[in-house]
Length: 236
Ligand SMILES: O=P(O)(O)OC[C@H]1O[C@H](OP(=O)(O)OP(=O)(O)O)[C@H](O)[C@@H]1O
Ligand SMILES: O=c1cc[nH]c(=O)[nH]1
Ligand SMILES: [Mg+2]
Image (tube, rainbow, N blue to C red; front, top):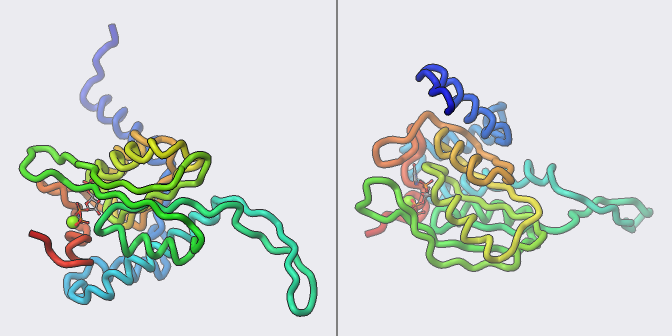
């Protein structure tokens, strides 16, 4: 029988498991860049009143993370004829499938699409079921091309409990097995990020920032509030 760990040993083990799980996470705003400015505007309750700017900032962070992910993709040499001479260009080997979760995912998705302009898209409707003690997520509408042997980028700006992303990813696998998976979010909670990393170990994770914690409603603190409502208005 295994010897039970003391609580301090257990918490050290849990912490090191979380550290291992998070080894595959890229935190874009860990270094100073214009991404930090866009993120600060997204969080600011006064700037948020301008929903056009809010959506555009989600889109701009989508563009920045798309660029960062593009450094992990494959390229093929192609001979290019300029008006003056021949040269060699590097073309993206194949455009990734871009998947997102309604509603808040839409502006973030547009940022990825601005860069991966020939990518097919996949859309998922996932929502939290109201009135349950624990967050439960229902995946509804799902539209996707074949994922077999493709690079998949699954993007959703808020990674709170991580359940929307994990259930979305699992539901998407009936469309085929991707050869490479990237998951992107703007703000993640530490526990949600560790959950996603544990449940989808094959994914490389990209976030603008990792925040402090979740509150009792499973909202990210300090976070930015409700990304779907701030983009498109509150719902009944
Ligand atoms: O990590 P989780 O705990 O699953 O929560 C994250 C989900 O919450 C947000 O969507 P929301 O449910 O607010 O829907 P909306 O975009 O329609 O507002 C967000 O865009 C994620 O999909
Ligand atoms: O903090 C959160 C959590 C879920 N959905 C949001 O939009 N924000
Ligand atoms: Mg919402």
